[in-house]
Image (cartoon, rainbow, N blue to C red):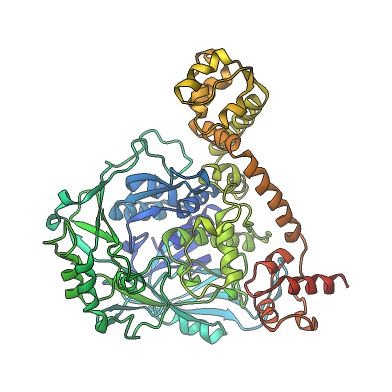
Length: 640
């Protein structure tokens, strides 16, 4: 396909953020030029070949509910599916899958090349082209210093556009470190992206350095799995996507394995500390606190005699194993020698060494809640350039930047999810208000309304938005409507109908639950810890009840009914908290508000409020360093 010299939107980078950005914008009718240094690297899984996990699985479900594609790609390529945290409350149940990394990339390429309105450009973006006259205020009341016109590439092409979305991952001025060795590159065997950071610095952006790491890959044939613990997937795996599959799971399901380091492992690893780029100061970037390297673990947690190592196949029938939990930038000989002290790895050989990558990012006080930059109209950033870690966080930002870029070109208002509506809203709100200086990773603890924002109800929370944006089709919204009606009718039925002792006491006795002495509301019975909704649905007395028969067929609806009954008190309390949250969100702060005129503001609050420019009192309250007394001063001044 011959590439054009003009598009509505240019997306720089074809990782997880770039895929979602380009796909969503194209589905919304925009012409998209997707710039990547290597077409074969589209959707490549640089680190762990897995999607989802604690809180990250929530993000994937939300992406899918809005019309994104990460969930579908994971479903098509997953070789082990597992729902995490099922022994705990439903707020933190999180889907995860191990993917075949080669299949994932192939499916991503197929998806992008098959989508109308997307053209792939194999090149490197070197420079942004901007109008240097301030374009004034846009439809959303934002003022900018510049407006984007296009990009220039390494091969000398000038590509014109109305919007640019940068999803460059770990490639901006990237350097890879292993022991004393350091070479330019954002991924093993792939060069770094240069020029773009310098261009953005020239426009007035601030930049910083972060680092991430990856563990060694091991040759499967050199591992003795018989001395490791088998980690099986779920017997009845659940997909990420809300689509109704006929043949799920699509791939053969396989096991992962667990082993542990020991004191001998730690002793050998310490011998490499003097050559460690992290401990010698050669790496300046800050790494992820919650995903530390193995050398960082044994340094910070020296009292722990061992650490978990998960052995995860990278492909269905391939020869390499991902050594999860052993991220490192120590010398290669130390990596291999230490690995051989771990049970099952006594004769192991490394297929690829572990290494750390240091790269440029742009602190997030420089972007709006739409992910558009505050300096340049039409310029958006998404993914690790915004200081996040993880495929899922990147994909969520890519989706939101693609949607908002398309909406702005159409002259429509922005699409912003509140933190009371979605983990995606929590993610973006945290990025902008907390301005993390280390790689941000999503956890369920980040969401104060997590019982409302469960992974199982992502469709009920968000699919209406995807439909309005044109990213969800009629068939899916019809299924959602039927499911929502079934849930409503089910809740009404169980709240209003009673059951007699003779119809239930047999089950209660078998479950060691106190028997009934009189008729009881079904909802009160379901609230008991020993009783599940399934116990009620399977009663013969309901065999002719159409509602019950429908709930027997629709496990998703039944599951949500059970959660909403059992946790009603907690859910009601969170609903009250959300109402208070919404009141503060509704108190708008003008974009040109003069905080410097409020003499009682603390120095830190004044600096943060001027830098972030919150659009509501609610947002101002969540900015780190802004105290309740500062909020009171702002509100008094606004009234005044």
